[in-house]
Length: 510
Ligand code: PHE
Image 1 (cartoon, rainbow, N blue to C red):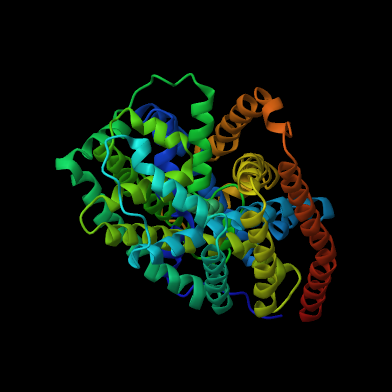
Image 2 (tube, rainbow, N blue to C red):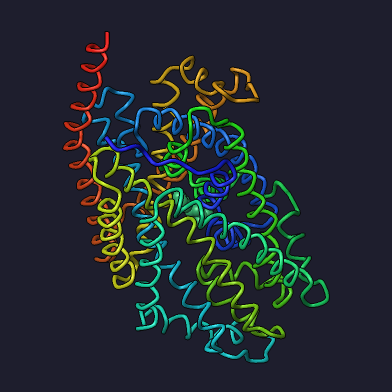
């Protein structure tokens, strides 16, 4: 058996997991959700979700990832199997946890390629020049057309998609230590530096009018506290931004040593992510939009969707600043680094599945994973609405369901005491046992409450199919989960053989 991969250093591990969590979610998704759902009114459910659900799940994934790594498993297929003696049904259930990050990656990587493409177009002066007008819609029009043409998709877009996939392939081939870790060591400081520069530019824009935007986000208030949609969106953002509910954190944790302090690591991951979200992420897009347009225009702009804000509104704003093309270049480079360190994390669960469960060698595992991603990315690029369907099912719905499964298995099936032993093993901070009860009772109740309001109340809208492309996307999702389920069952034989072999060796030793 070949040795499992591992991280090179403590700092590398922290930066890599921070890079996993910090992504487009922090810099694009967060400000548009905050703007759309009332700024300060959104932040109250946001913080409550962070503490009741985000932090507990972050710690659970770290604890379980470290535990499963000791037994040679990193993917959710193997991890769930571990708790049920590798019963087929458990491994199949775990496959959903591998499918989610992969399905997300199939559109995430396409958007990542836009950021790289737009960075180049900015520096080569290809982004349209601004029109002087106080009307937000007029100001944005040339940028809207530019974006539409680009994502049609144009030949340039296609080229950058292939390039982005190639970059991901290259880094993943180098492995966890020499690939992902080194990328994070360069990417994370770059993200923070570029973020600071842009934050300062945006806050100070229009004679510090940008500050109004920050005030809008931090004007905490309870005006929408009873609106279920705001709760759903806020908690969905917590899942997405912290990379929870899909084993993406657990797979990174599985490459740590059994002596790693998982509570510390979890707190660092969440801490850096939240810093980049609520400090840096809050200081760029919304303040810039406030400085440029009237406050009234903000929710209107946000309504246009998460990606519009990043690829249409922001270039429109930046190009009207002095040295606009350079600011725009930094903006897209920031987005690219953030997205790259996350897309690597979205693919790693599949690589772990092939390596740990099928015992494939690293290079083959990466190649097959990248081929699957390339296939999905083509569908995202060429099938209209494919992105939105995937984002809804994998990026929202399944995340919540799988988060619930994780809590149930890792706390209740594993057992409160076993979990607590793992939680306190080699950790400096000894959390009191009642935290496990919060994790095991309060967090799942919170998730069930959210699913109830969201899915049950909106049942028809969610399941109704009003156009054929949605059907294509849903069939694809089902086929993909089926494919991973077949692997889960087939690889079971290999795992059971290894377990028998180990037992035999132990007996011979005696
Ligand atoms: N957390 C990432 C972001 O904010 C997205 C992501 C989710 C990355 C899951 C990896 C795994 O963009």
